[in-house]
Length: 303
Length: 212
Image 1 (cartoon, rainbow over the protein chains, first blue to last red):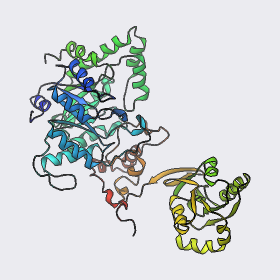
Image 2: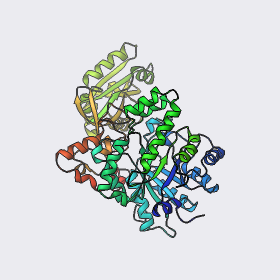
Image 3: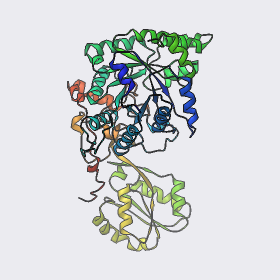
Image 4: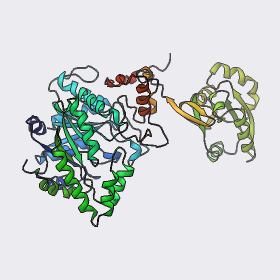
């Protein structure tokens, strides 16, 4: 078991990092995780394991992360504040670290009304910034949120957070990034980029404030597989920005999947050369099999 | 004000059954919400009577959550109350419990669902404003409450899902974080939001200390 986050080493050495998302199954089948992992072997430096994403019950991110560790893949365990209070979250961080997890992505979490149990009571005892702050204090100061000291080994993890340049209101989004860094974020994975222009403007401001020197930013890429998916991303997924030009490109394409792939490839190429971007985070929703080609063709394999 | 909503008539009738019932309303919140004032109590009495269910009496308490005052007012209804095994209460959850405490031998029927502490925006339009968390943080957020109005109670919002000022979980609902930002911006106090707000002390919410 490694004592260190490999992702952290790669980023701190100034190398370009790739992360990819592996969504756990709606079942107790460990092979589903294994199959996805084998498909993506060698494509990414670390793999995000989602935490009941969109509030749909799935295998836990902790279990999914451990399954990846058993295959010697490096997981990034996602943690949301929707289903556990500060006691449950801190307990799981201790357990995750004991089991060898070295990267944690702190999220507030999608509201339960979006998922398959809309009648559930959401917890939201704390939010993503407070979770970052708590985990930072656990490792830096050896204390729990309450101030009660840990006894023994501290949970040393590489702390991540999400950032969304497309969120409303735009004017506070760079401040919000700074706030996450202040709270303890060491790496950032952004919302999927379709609007490159807006993303570039956001990054200009990020660099002006020197934030790219304080945190490693991995830009999100999600290839659009179909017109239906483009419609969903454009009109229904909160906080995404699919510009009309991109939408029309997919809609008018003879082969929307091929077009979506080409757009994603181009986006990766552009993002790779954007100053301050230290990596790419690929989320291929229901299209994981496209990731190897995407990584290979964009020249990221030999980075 | 405590905002309530009357339960569906079929549900109320089902719970009452065929035997006599006594009706209780409340002069304050339930009156303002049009769920348990004099008009609503009379209207419901007529609907119940039309189903051939006897209504032994009715009263509007002032307010239903005032235990001592209830005892005084209800003295005039002792005989009517004796005739009914069931009491239908059109008041908030507090009022219903106060009545239940006064009549341990009777079956209490809740005629309303209690929703939140909120503001009357217009006639019959209410907005949730407070969850009585025990530690008011309104001065940090320009007088707008994210604890009660943000569906994720985020103290370090916004979550990033709102669109043009509308909440992601219901576009009919304003994103309170959007409002906080616009408000503080106008006041030139956006810097207030650069501070990371620590986790909230929920122990002040009256969970362990239920009497003051």
